[in-house]
Image (cartoon, rainbow, N blue to C red; front, side):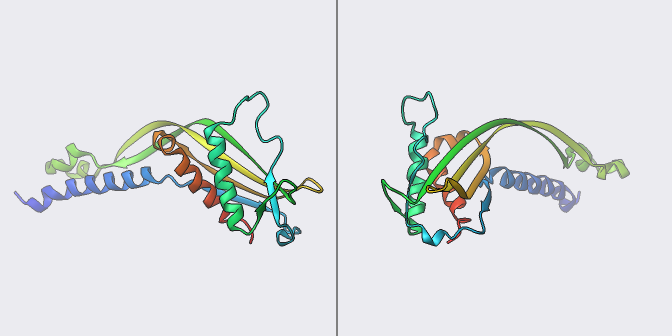
Length: 187
């Protein structure tokens, strides 16, 4: 028996498994940004958080809210802005979650036909595997607003999947998402 013919199907299966695993581990959010091209953000020097940042009816400041505020402060200060009680800019943010369902169809090697060489044309017949995947999609939206005329100057949005690994490392994931959003912030 030719060992090369026996190893080939196993290597193909292993390759598909590694590719699937790598694509499943990609957890960077998609980043979008909108910018008022007429605004000169260099003329602003100070910022603060929007006064009504805490949602109505919430009696306490959540950990996730504190993590987001700290990450935004870090990014705004790194961009040259200073936190102030009488700011030029307001920074506001919102978070949303939504349950989603995705239908995935993959071509998978069929172990039975791949190992049985006496099936001729059926040996290379594709095997399709369809699976339904339910997941939670999270959105973080950050707005930078001119305080004097209450005009939106810049908006950054991160959209990504939330999973157990995200929740277990919430502060790290929030810092990462906010940093990615602010990469789109005009200097």
